[in-house]
Length: 88
Image (spheres, helix red, strand yellow):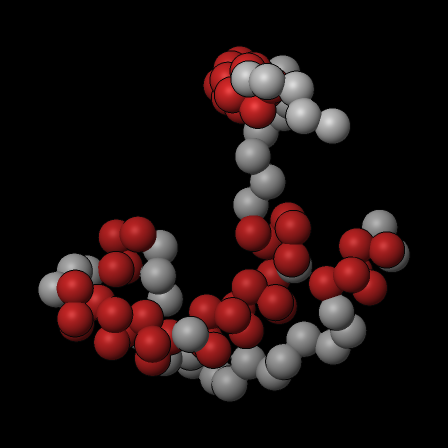
C-alpha cells in the first residue's frame, strides 16, 4: 500500500521520538548481541579494520573500531542470534 509522503513523515516522527527518549535509550551492541558475540566480531574484523584505517589514513580507534589483537583468542559464539533472541 503506497501512501504518498508517509515514509518521510514517519521518519521525522521516529527521529523526534528518538531524540525525546520516549522510545527509550538506544540499545548497545552488547545488549542486542551479547558480550561474547561482540568480542568475536571485533576479533574477526580487526585485521580488515586495521587495513581500512591505513588506506583511509584514519585512527579508527576514535570511532570504536577494535584494532589491537585480543589478549586471548575468542571462540565463535555457539548458537545463532535468532536463538538468543528467542530465548529472551
